[in-house]
Every structure is written in C-alpha cells, then in structure tokens.
Length: 143
Image (tube, rainbow, N blue to C red; front, side, top):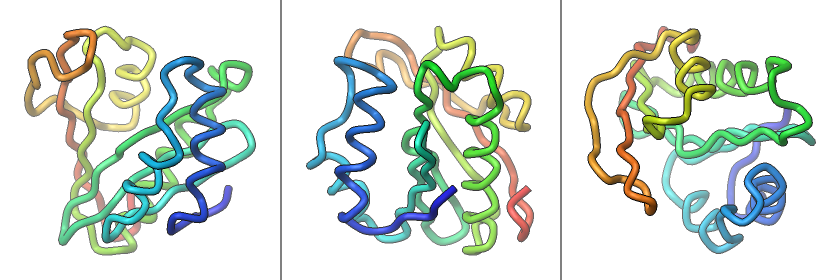
C-alpha cells in the first residue's frame, strides 16, 4: 500500500476508479480538486484505493474503490484500516463517510469496521438514492 498526496496521484486514482466502477468513474480533474484540499490523502494498491481527508479532529472517507476481480478478499478492509490509522496519526478523533443505502456490501464492510449510522441524506446520489451518514471514533493509533 502506498500513501499518496497531491495532484500527481490524480491520474492513477482516476484510472483505478474507472476500472472499479466502469462508466461511473470520477474524472482526473475531480481527483485533482479532491487531492488539493488541505488534509487530503490517498492510499492505493494496484487493485484499489481509498481517498480521505482530515480536518481538525475529524476525518472523512471520500471514496473507497476496489476492482471487481479483487473484491471479497479483504482489500477494502485493509484500505479502510490504513485510512483510519493515517487519520488517527494526523490527530483525527472520528471518521465519517456516506454510503448508498442500497450498497449492502459496503454497508457490511463499514459495520464490521465499527461504523454506525448518525444520519441520512435524502436523494444524495444522482440516481435519487439516499446516503447514510456513518461515523466511527478513532484512537490516536487510528483504530
């Protein structure tokens, strides 16, 4: 796993996202904008990545993507754990994320990692799907 910061990582993340979610991938420019935010970082492997950011004592998962061939082998959990560790080391005491209400696999991953629901964002996604807002406390070691 490689820790990435800055716009130089945008082409890699855009390519991975396009392979993970064909037809729904974010553009390189979108990743450039996300990576330009203060506290933004990514952790990547050849088969997936997590994009997150820290701000003060909070952190947020912006995107977690794993290639279809690598799903259900624990990579998503390892990426999530690394992001929590990085955020905790940066001083974050809690981590947030949004997940589509109907994304059962992602919801199971986040529940197993200790995330719990704290809210709902109606019609958050372009297709009208609600997003569930999840939160997990972090220790200084990130877990």
